[in-house]
Image 1 (tube, helix red, strand yellow):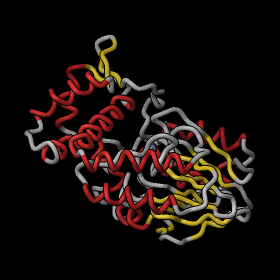
Image 2 (cartoon, helix red, strand yellow):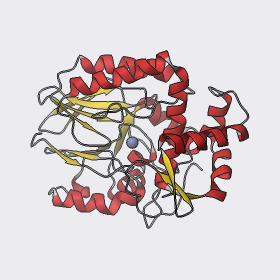
Image 3 (cartoon, protein in one colour):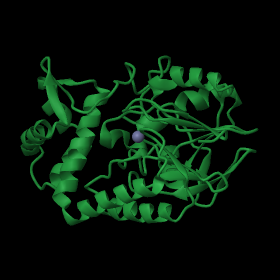
Length: 319
Ligand SMILES: [Zn+2]
């Protein structure tokens, strides 16, 4: 890597944080609200206490990336920057903001101060980081590219051997994700720092893996549908650290993403999707029973209790 950045790799489902060093240090993605105490300690250990940060950039507004915004902006007066499309939803307190309602993942309220556009530059004093639009995981996803350093902070656009969840109810996001892989493949990147997992030292290979996966989904939409449904449900199992059997059906039926998946692409009544999804989760190993609770099958570290919010701020929004 490079002295211009510090990388805080967290266990899934918490998101990684990246510190862009310089006279005006910048943090990219803070994590869940409940991750704030660990984040503050890590920043301190890097010699950049939170009050020295000049800016917080969000690659996108999901709870594992933007959950810390409320405290970082409120308590430390750090301005927040993100893509203009997500900024508009957040600042309007739109029901779609942070996908909090859709994914059943609450986020504490915050305001965006800089609605970023492609080509905007974050100048830390040590490096210029260009804003690159990388939609697909969310419609307003962005990445930061430092051409002089050959570094890319990708958020959930692409990981070392994977890519962020693409919503199967949004065919336009499949198109967008494919365009994102093509756009990133044109950049000079020696190392990519993603929102989950380790640094990617062969970004071209990672982009090729992601492009192949997207092409597979395009040729077999039912695979994309099952992948999407299983992944978001597995994520819910991780943040809840498992669910009792009696909790599963009510949780799914009150989750807007689940109702949307039932309508399209599965074209069934939501109640009729619960059984097949459960069967597919267990068959594929995406979930398993453990002591009477359904838990995620992939390795994970449950986020701190009350994962959505920082310990002192129990306000939830927009749920
Ligand atoms: Zn994420």
